[in-house]
Image (cartoon, rainbow over all chains, first blue to last red; front, side, top):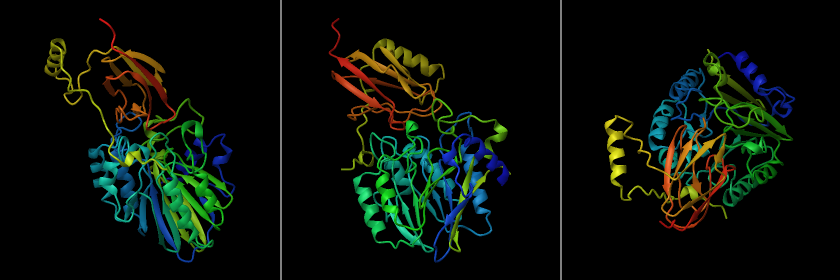
Amino acid sequence: MKRDDFLKHVAWTGTGIAWSLSGTGLFSAGALAADGGISFIQISDSHIGFSHPENPDVIGTLQQTIAAINAMPVQPSFVVHTGDVTHLAKPAQFDTAKQLLGTLKAPLIVLPGEHDVIGTSDAFFAAFRRSDAPQGWFSWDQGGVHFLSLVNVFNFEIDGKLGTEQLDFVEKDLAAQKSSTPIVVFAHVPLYALFPPWGWTTEDGSRVLAALRRFNAVTVLNGHIHQIVQHTDGNIRFATAASTAYPQPAPGTADKPGPLKVPSSKLLSVLGYRSVEIARNAATISDHSLQT
Amino acid sequence: MARLIRACPRRHIHHMNRLFTGLQIALLAVTLTAGANAAAPPLLPAVATVHIKDFKYHLPVLTVHVSDRVTFVNDDDEAHTVTATDTSFDSEGLDTAGTWQHVFTKPGTYHYFCELHPYMRATIVVLPAASK
């Protein structure tokens, strides 16, 4: 990993976007009151099935990502894929993705992105349904942290919507937690209004954020926008992740979102994965590029 | 109430079982013989083509008649869909350069959007069959 390279990319994509840069620095999160300790990895937006000049080998870059994670001397407690596993939700694309992700040494958690549920969520659930999450969303406790894995891509005419049933689940689930418990939330589309003109927002995310306000420390991790953007709002720290497939333009820097062509020699520097460590009352978010 | 329509099988109406004209069969034969990608259905004559470019449907409002065939072409680098808000038609994912055709069988006003970018919206007005 060349962390410096990734930092440069972050500076580049963040040019002129003050709210993407946190006061505490790009890669260090605020304090968390964790009783235990846990580390995990976030990967996102692998878009298996994509084969265009922006990245003609998305299988290869996902394999590189997996190899880097498997090479970590201390394996994470789990790897979470925050959606857009596939490009077009084709069963064959899910088969490929499942085979590739099956080579991870650590346990895998997968939530869907909108590209995984085009027309139907059947193929996604056939590949990644969990017995403890029949509707896709679920929560669990691990390492002194309370985790919530949410789905905000199931609404028919709106991407970035949780729906009343899931919101009720979230409120009930969080009501049972102590305010001192660190909370980590996963979803595909950003839960706050990151850039609504491009659909980079969750229409009814405010109810989740309201339920998270009383906690001492909250980390919300998303994918969807294929770039690292960090944002802090009170006790809530938001971080979107890089893709393993291709970058997208920084918000408002192009006429439209979508795959961004960068020079081939630079591609690996804008793809990557994220490690999150919660230990000694602090959470550390580190983004790693695939550039070696 | 949350609408988990994606969690349920959606109707996908593909009007590919219609009668082919002799000309169309000939075109199909030529296409296949020429060694074109057999997995892609041959494009049949259409009364109109809607290009999807820069995250917009061009044309925003298209008027056709019953039995007319419309071709949709994705000219963007990003995937899109052509999905009716009443679920009466759905292209599913159209990759770059992907095409999809639909024959309208009932008069009406059909609003459609892109499932991947739901702010992309357009309308097709279907009038009763044109008199010959």
